[in-house]
Amino acid sequence: MLNRRQLLQQSALLSLSPLVPAFLTRTAHAAGNEKDRRILVVLQLDGGNDGLNTVVPYRDEHYAKLRPKLQIKSDRLIKVNGEIGLHPALKPAAKLLDAGRMAIVQGVGYPNPNRSHFVSMSIWQSARLEESEHGQYGWLGRTLDVGAGPQSAPQGILVGPGSAPVALWGRRSTIANVKSLEDLALAAPAGILKAATGKPSGELARWAADASDSAFSTVERLSALAGHDSPSSKSGYPNSQLAQHLQLVAKLIRSGSAARVYYAVQTGYDTHATQQYVHDDLLRDLADGLKAFVDDLTVDRLADRVLVLAFSEFGRRAAENDSEGTDHGAAAPLILAGPTFAQGVLGLAPNLADLQDGDVKMGIDFRQVYATILDQWLAVRPEEVLSARFERLPLFTS
Image 1 (cartoon, rainbow, N blue to C red):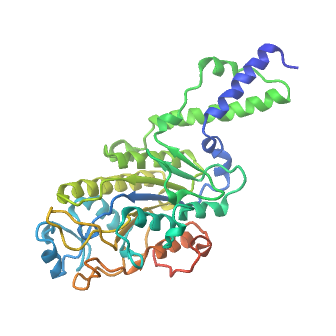
Image 2: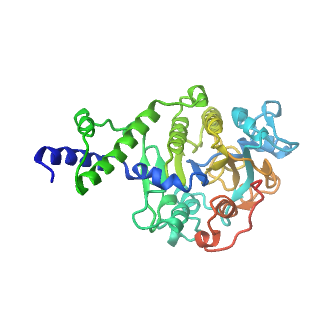
């Protein structure tokens, strides 16, 4: 039987356990049989990325005519093939493309495009065209629902500030929001740690000690991770918010987090005026962050397990406006990074002589990309998530 002092010690030990996030205290159990399972990291390029100045159709004579001030001269581009070149700020990402670690899917959109930020983002996040189905469950939430059980640890994590996007909303699955690793690395009070050295007696005491040991182990692991960098991450991550989010994702993956999906947002792509310098900076941050992230994961042989999907709710209009910016458009290129891809570029370059209401025409439905990721990456039946069948794309080598 416990005496008063022992009971207080064990109660103090037990009280620490709820302070450690459940999705991390359960990591060892969750990761035990699934340490090799694949992970999806989604980057939302918020505001509508200008696809024509991201992946530039430099051989199309209409490009310079539509963009007399915003055009990027051919000699500044990073040539991908005889038709397209990457924005010069994407040089780090071009190295991933050369290594087979990045893929560009051109002309991605959906039928009857909507130029509203809210509506178009809802379509992408829900994978539903009908407005009545927006704001309910997201495509990632429905994906995670497939494997969710009662009281399961969250398998979706929003990294960074803000509330969880609709994309992560599910019926059964749960998600978490992690702003920084330091917020999770709670230091255990010294008195409680000292109390833990005693040998527990009795069933309740042993149970309390086991729970506390799990909490302490998690605290120690997080504290170590908060200050730990791989050889790549020590010098590879730039000081941008997106890069810091990606570095946090890499640390959580390395820690053994049970999450299958991570989500981060890069804002600022609504470039209606003076676009050039803003867009340059955004793409540089994106490319630097992606390269550092993939390099970091490669050090620990994790890159083949982690797919990055970078999307925006729409592209910009083909013609520049009078404010040296671009307005809301439709189809645009989509970027994938991480594992080895079957080919670097999928889909046709935009035909600027054949526009639809001033916008680039859709060549590939974004739900084809989702279906391919669900089927060939996450091993989830796409029809169960998308409620329709979409043709798969030749993205992955295996």
